[in-house]
Image 1 (cartoon, helix red, strand yellow):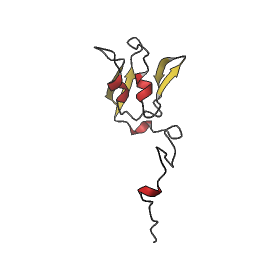
Image 2: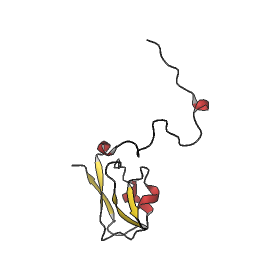
Image 3: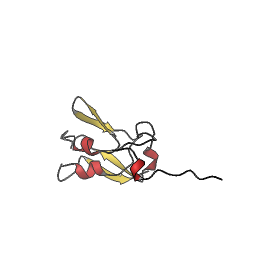
Length: 97
């Protein structure tokens, strides 16, 4: 069995380029152990969650958050951590069911 030589760091593309694609092409939501819950009555639509989500899972329409795309959300919790609403956050994390 022949082993294919992996490229070294000098041969890698510059920037954040993933040869396999992004979460947009793959439904990665089943990786979660925790899931976000959006509480629309608490949301101030600052979009900090949208800016910081690494998987573009925050759904925005007409400049306002309208939900979370669970097909692509990996449950990292960045959206909940970055939410500035106090004392009760507009996005909370809980166990995946």
